[in-house]
Amino acid sequence: MSSRRVQKVAEAIREVVSMSILTELQDPRVRDVTVTSVEASGDLRYAKVMVSVMGDETRQNLSLRGLQSAAGFLQSKIADRIDLRYTPRLTFVLDQGVKHSISVAQILREVLPGEQVLPDETAVAEAGESAVEAVDGNIPPRPAPTSGYPPGSPPVDPPTSRLEQADGTWCPPPDPSPHT
Image (tube, rainbow, N blue to C red; front, side):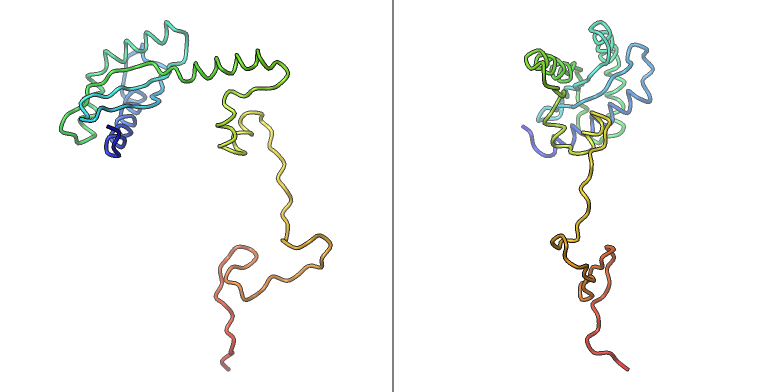
């Protein structure tokens, strides 16, 4: 059951759990943990928390054990901050999405050695220019602004009957009959 309410509660659980891990959890085993998503059951009694842990496999397993031992504490934080009939029982699962995307990018680099393969080209294409800057560190050139007229035509004053001026500010239309 993926109703809108279940999705909203899952997002609220994700926010509470991630902030509690970041600010209130004192377990030294739980470091470099990112809560990527939460899947809640239809009756909201169970929630699967997907986490990503930076580090090797032993570090990830250690963090997962630390999170499982802190599940009761995190459930109490959820109960304090979200008004639900039942507090969801939390289970923590390692999110392999980042690891899979890195392995796919590595396979693509091996198959296509001459081309540069980005980790996620569709995300870069959807994010647009800012993602390109983040990936290569270069700022792509912007096209020069045009006036909308063909090249070589004489400059034309902007019309004064428009509500929007050339600088982007709004003005009232001119009064056709002056009152004197």
